[in-house]
Image (cartoon, rainbow, N blue to C red; front, side):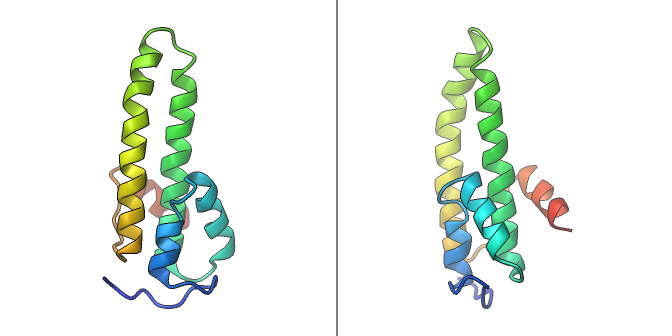
Length: 111
C-alpha cells in the first residue's frame, strides 16, 4: 500500500481512489470536480469516467442491434462487474493500475 498524500476532499488518497469507481462514471465526474490537486485520485477518477462511460455507451448501442446485441450485452455485463470490482480494489490498495486502452486515454485527458 502506497501513501499518495493528501486530497482536497479530506479523505486518504487510497479511499478517494477506490471511491472514484463506486458509482462508475458518475463518481468519476464527482471526484474530477472535487479533487483539484492529487494526481493519483484524478487519474482514477478520469479512468473511471472513461472506462464506465464507454462501457455504458457500448452496452446501450448493443441493445439496438438484433441478435448480436444480446451476445454483446451478455459479455459486457460480467466484464463490467469484474472491472468495477478490480478497480475499486486497486484504488483502495493505493495502486495506480492502468487499464489497457482506457488508462492511456485517461492519462491523455488529464494532460
